[in-house]
Each structure stands twice: as C-alpha cells, then as structure tokens.
Length: 156
Image (cartoon, rainbow, N blue to C red):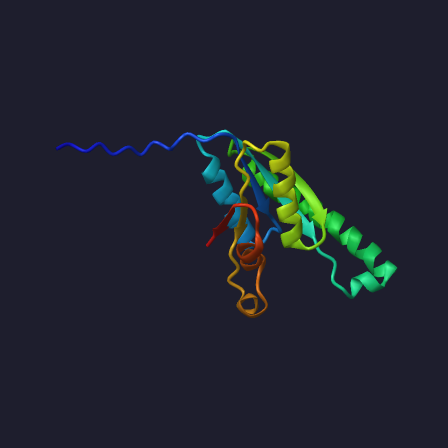
C-alpha cells in the first residue's frame, strides 16, 4: 500500500494577525513568526503598540504630558523598526498605537477586526517573556492565555 504525504498548506481564508509589538526581543520574535504564518496565504499584519500609563503618572497632568511625548517618540521608533523588519516580507501591514492595558487593547483590536470581517481568522500573536519577574507577576502572554476570547499564538 502506497501512502502519499503532502506538505501543502491547507487553504485558509483571509488571515488577519494582530501582533503586540514593543520592540522587545519577544515582540520581535512574534512579528517574525507572524510573517512566517502568512507565507503563501492571503492576509495582513496589524502591528499594535500599546502605551500603558502607570498609576502614578495618572495622578499628575504634567507627568502624563511628559509621558505622551515619550510615547510619541517611541511610537515613531517602533513604527520604523517594524517597517524595517517587514519591508522585504511582502506582507501587507499596518501600525497602530493604542493606550490602555495591553491585554485589553490587543483583544479589543482583534475583536473589532473580527466584527468588521467575521469570515477572517483573527489571532493575536505575542512573544513569551523570559523575564524572571514575569513568572511572579505575570506577563501579557500569560494574561492573554488565561483570558483571551480570541485565538492566540504565543511565540517562544
């Protein structure tokens, strides 16, 4: 009996990947993985940077203004970094900055994209942190794994 094995990828509809990106090594791995996930498929990568204010900064209007300037500068750096990584990939992509709690904002982006195109696949892609402190207080990846109502890809 002869068995045929195929390595062809199964057909998928439009894949819309939401990548949490802050320029860190785990986020960079997630962005690279998103590019690999789209190879040979139709889709787009939404690169999302979430600026999160600390509770102390929320007490001072002056501190918030200073942080906003920092967030603006960081956004430009991250947009350029993501663009450089994605330039030769051939993937369609968009960069968005949000403000709030990182996990909530990533889920909100994925849910709003799904509402606009319910037939598309909308996973969130994040990198796993190797920071020892995240084992104690948790990480974005762990929080999403516990609470995300949308598909999730965690890249080691």
